[in-house]
Image (tube, rainbow, N blue to C red; front, side, top):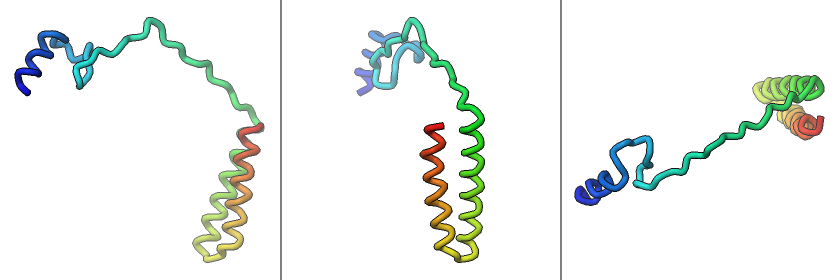
Length: 87
């Protein structure tokens, strides 16, 4: 095993940046493309706020033991999550 590591050092070089752990070279892209960020808008923000408050309220109802209301609030919040992605 040691002989193999020494052989890899001779073939691959000793620079750890240019080789990976298994000894294979990783291709370095010439240009990295970063996608432009999209502003989701105000509608997305407000739906997200309502969804968060519903989840917090559902957590409060879980603490008090009212599982029916808590479950209903979680279901409505998940429905708003779908709406949030469409807005």
